[in-house]
Image (cartoon, rainbow over all chains, first blue to last red; front, side, top):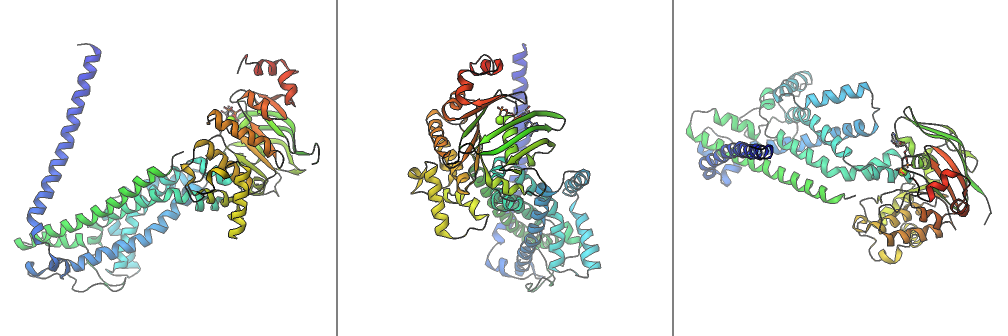
Length: 285
Length: 254
Ligand SMILES: Nc1ncnc2c1ncn2[C@@H]1O[C@H](COP(=O)(O)OP(=O)(O)OP(=O)(O)O)[C@@H](O)[C@H]1O
Ligand SMILES: [Mg+2]
């Protein structure tokens, strides 16, 4: 066998391995989704969406969990977006590049990889116990904010870095200040990237169960939250609760709730993909 | 018109990036309402020199300089000078057209808005005047709301010139403004530069010998961080006094 033939063979082999790996992942995913739909799709109807939880599976619904999830999403976005983007702008555009900022950078990168339950315990220690916010929406949202802040900071910095330097130069050359340049020229170009990252981080956050369990979020809530100090439940918590029940009916409910959660995640991710696509088209030089 | 007024008086300008010295003591005077061209082989420090004149080097870490640059008798690098003011007096057009990803109108209005001009009629007036001076008005007057990135490269570069003109600087620096343009667009920009000197002083870096010969009044030849020769363009291109200059403009190296 010549060298060329060997290379070609290796090429083919690698392709086959890669296809197999992808196929395995896809098959499992498909099996999971099909199984879920088989179990749960029939259960999804208007009364399932609009009912409160109940001891009888057939009468139980997810309205409290959906409301909780949307509240959490909104509050988390409200806290995490300005703080994360602000920190990202500071670190990327303003901070002096010295050892101290290097240490901060490395730590933020590490924080993005810390298991979510650790954030739950942190939330339990700080928000529930120290600040006495109990098992409120505020506690949940602040905990999830901590969880996704590092991701938002990192994507903000990446989005800012991707802005062509010619744009900054053009602005400075007209006598603009650093803030004018950042605010009027750099941020608008980076914004789709920042939003994409934020939305992906949010869609990760709303699927998180561990931190909410750790702060002690309730599972049985028979009312809709009206303020940020109200206790709450959320879809992953509700699902977690239902799958741990022995009755078959609750397993079906869980499958149905998972489908709803997947749909919300899917919508969020589609928005993110749409934004990223638009971003690509915008800057050409 | 005042003859032979000096806008820039540069003396013994030395510059370093880190430990690497790229300008080794440049002295020259830039005359008002003239076009001064800078030529020389790649990497000899022309862009570095140009960026010293509007303090765009401030953004480059490790940049350091010695010597003095006077803009109308004020020291460009003195501590009581705000570099943002300097950049309003000394505009710059870059090698690659870099319009903002905004409308044509907003591109030109930006420089005025950041200094607080909000009056719509004033803005519209200056936008029109700047586009006319940059010979772009006829092509875009019906599409001022159009995104500037949809313009052709040559149009974009003229937009960048209009943008620089709009804030009414005293000097405009051009760093190889035509190097990414086709010959027709290049001709347009050259004609434009000719006209600009009625109102502004122009310093242009170019790799194109004919361009320097065609549209400049004075020419400086840079090599390895030294200003080898600086004189009337006609003299540089017909009877250069330095052998190196002669070799360069006749294409014997470069
Ligand atoms: N930001 C920078 N950091 C470090 N070195 C730099 C930087 N910019 C330029 N240099 C170096 O300084 C020297 C002069 O560069 P400069 O860009 O001024 O040359 P130039 O004459 O404009 O070249 P060209 O004709 O290719 O544009 C080069 O050796 C270059 O490598
Ligand atoms: Mg250059």
